Length: 529
Ligand code: AHR
Image (cartoon, rainbow, N blue to C red; front, side, top):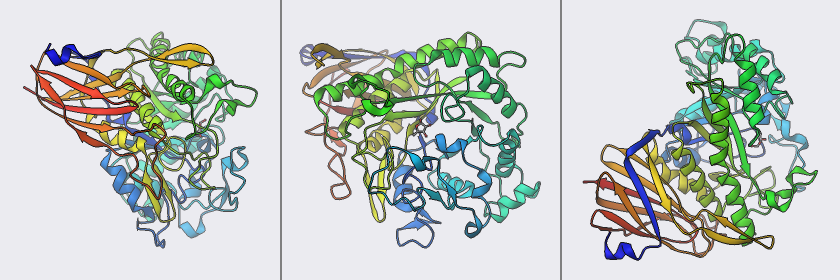
């Protein structure tokens, strides 16, 4: 250890000889729901709009998203999915029906919202082919969530037929061609319902297991190896996993199931959940130290959720053929910071959210053997979004920058990392509480090692020695996302208040020494000797 390293307060050891698994690009995936201003205004502006667009799709969004290598985008819900009839979104746009949106009666609408527009009465201008085009433009793959609660199983495979049957083969392929997509869309990822324990039908796990079989027993892929995702648990509901797998395993096993969906949102639960389940939510921008740390604590629950559900799945699926698909995650705050009134569940996104994203993505990377996909909720104008967009205004959020930085991990070999740092200490409702001091993950591709490190402390810089066990660093570059104040955020008028910067890193005797500023996310890219 160099004399400089001896002064450090923390140590991160990357173990080159302890691979965990390949980091699936799908861990860096997204979620788009017909909810508030996600689709209309956020993504779809229409072909005749003055806003720069490609076939009706907001160009600025596509250009920025593409940079982050988005693997998969999930659509059309969420809760909306189990109300959606995919046939409403095909055929000539001018003839498509207008339908009442699932979220019409949400209690979280701003009183100032115009409730006559597409956010409430969906014109279905953004349907299957438009969504597929959006995915193609942003170089990602579509993941469709099928309606299990209110459409028959027959409609599910008909939707697959519309998307994937060869050009000229079926009536639905001819319809797809008339809609502008002669060649098959080759959709691989299909969700079989959404939150079937809640808005997706209030099923018991046993009831849902039977439904899952009805929907998945016969679905032709047309040469595409389908990856079906079951509607998995709400956070820590281990019984949902255990009982579903036990029931599904009867007579015929898990069939074509590839992923088991896990949903986990972070909110200030410690503030007390009353009958109003959202009473624990707090403001996205005005937060005190306790609220800052508590929401990070919520996101750190992800580690235990992954391992506990994994163990429950393994009782039946001993070879772990089915992996976890965390297809909704992120911070969820109280209404009040929407970028504009129609953006239902829209919220600002501060440096705190960037820290939350860093902690969560590091968790997924460290469990690359278990997590096959993860979709942050949601892409634009909703919850922990990467973008805010309204009319001709557009900006990226601090969370966007984390995705941009972490894209370097995709398809790398996840390595075991041992991190030692003094715990964060804070006051939790008058009692002492602690949080992890530093969080990190590492991946290797050839001779390039990517290490990401998040410092959640609001006031402590951590100086760490980063030791590479089984190799040595030759050169290093660092990218740091930090702000003088964790409340910092980007707006339409100040879009670069939070943005990453390059930093100098010292390499001494093969080891790296770096100072990680408070409330920061850092990426180190190391060329190995
Ligand atoms: O992302 C918002 C909602 O949260 C989704 O529609 C639902 O699946 C979840 O409860």
